[in-house]
Every structure is written in C-alpha cells, then in structure tokens.
Length: 236
Image (cartoon, rainbow, N blue to C red; front, top):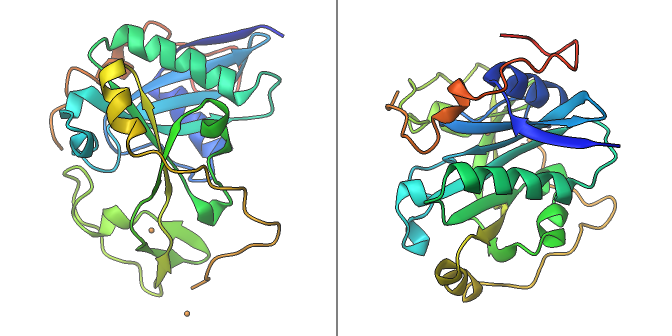
C-alpha cells in the first residue's frame, strides 16, 4: 500500500490527535505538522514542536531553534511500520529546517509506553525526567502546565473543583542527533534501553502568547491545505 507523508494543516493535525492520540490534544507550543496518507486515505499526523520548555536544547549546548520535540505520533490503523513513517517525517523536517540539530521525544510510562518506536530507530536513550505530579479530574489527566502559568505565555487556569493531585514517575527521554558533533554529545549520555513493562504493571491512582519563531511557524502556510482524502477531516 502506498505511503505518502506531507505537510498538513492545523485542522488535520488536531483531528488526528483528538481521534488517535491518548492525550487528545495538539501541543500548545508552535508546531510543525505532517500528515500521513496510506492508499490515498488520511491516517494521521506526526507533529514536531518546541516542547514543554523553550530551553529544550540547553542541556546539550543548543539554542532554541536547534532542537525540537517529536511531540505526537497520532495514527489510526495502518500497514506501514511507525518507524518508517517517522523516518520520512524527519527527513522532510530536516529539509525544511536545515539548522535543526537535535530531536527529543518522551515516552510516558503511565500510558504503558517505554519508547519501542525510538528503540527501533536507534534513538539514544538518556534516562528519565524527574518525577512530577499532575491533576486528575473525573478520571481524566489534566495538562499540569496549564495550572502553573508556565504554558508558553497562556493564562494560568484554575484547578477544577474535585481535582486530585497525583505523583507520577518521570518520562523516558530519547534523543535523535542530526549531525556528528551533537551525536558525540548525546552518545556520552546514552543509557541501556528500558524494557517493555510487564503485563499488568501499573502506577499509582489518585489518593497533569509569544511570537512564533521562523523555525516552527510554517505549519500555518504549508502547501497541502486540504486533506480531503479522509472525508471526516475538517477542510480549511
């Protein structure tokens, strides 16, 4: 079955995340969205973004425009391996952003993820982020940064009545260097890959505007504005 990856509009990216990603949301920060078509049908999106912090690249000696996060892989049932889809998306991103030197991504153990996709593509594992906390309300995980006032300049939200604060483990961190110099930096941080959690493993239940930079502002003016191969995708 033929695979096609191309820049897509924000509406298509939102549709993919709301339907086929566990978070149900697109990243708040400025993003670059690539749609995925298989056999002519729209099957989802791969989204890159500045990440949860504007200092994403600082630990590796990089400026903000030199690093970005692979923030969403939101796909419905498909035939092509996820590793192939992401690899094509990365090639397109590098072509559009020649100054980009590093990709970072995170796997959430609460969702049962250990980073198998990144391991298949030989990303470099560097351990976990620090343990944190999130808010849960009516069984839903809430976006923690929305209530701290550090969500890329958006107004601080009030925690809903009845929400419960829950401690959570750190996320698995993976790096994908895009040049030899930054690869050496990342390799020095490499740790053994984590294994897939045992079946039945669980985590504690409740007792989660700056001006756009040139680097990631092209998602609003991409060449493919009509992902109409899938009739349920909003057309803008």
